Length: 281
Image (tube, rainbow, N blue to C red):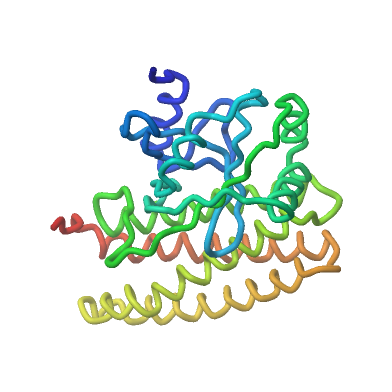
């Protein structure tokens, strides 16, 4: 039976490229689509997630502290190939249920970030599963809910803005640099590096060929990528083991200031060049 509350979140998530309001405003959310274990029908569920490096994200089968595993968990146990919507991207993924020490360490990081997970565990009376979602690489360009390349750039940039805002808030709220916050920072750094590398090697050469007049803009953007890469490396060093929260917070703020200026300039200059509708096969 459809869940009206979940459907409202799903609709808002898709309409706003991952941004939602109300109770979940500012939360890290994704949409997980599984295949029904009994029906074979697709089922989409909004879930909170934990960043966990370059290759995967983590979701927790808490079911609000219910004594029973949620339906989506039973579904992915029966069919571990799932679909993930991150707000910017939609991609196929392989679900792996963590076990033993790996599960316990991941759950402990979650509890460190949000004590409510511990309350759910105590209430449930079962070991709450932690599931890793590994993206399955596909040929061709990424699947972005956007009508043009210009819109796609804005959607991707806004995803970085939301995640960086969350990290800044977590830094400001805490007095210690916890394990999950370190992971959040390092995951963000990897994603930003990957995005800028893809622009330098893919989009910028195409634009240079089609729009020679944009050469000064592209040169400036490449220079800014180099500067941001330096700030990313400094942030990585600041969140390494043994670093204090104050140093990490300072590096996050430095990166946030220069990154926002860079993203805004890129949008102002490149979106008009990329405004044509995306070609469909």
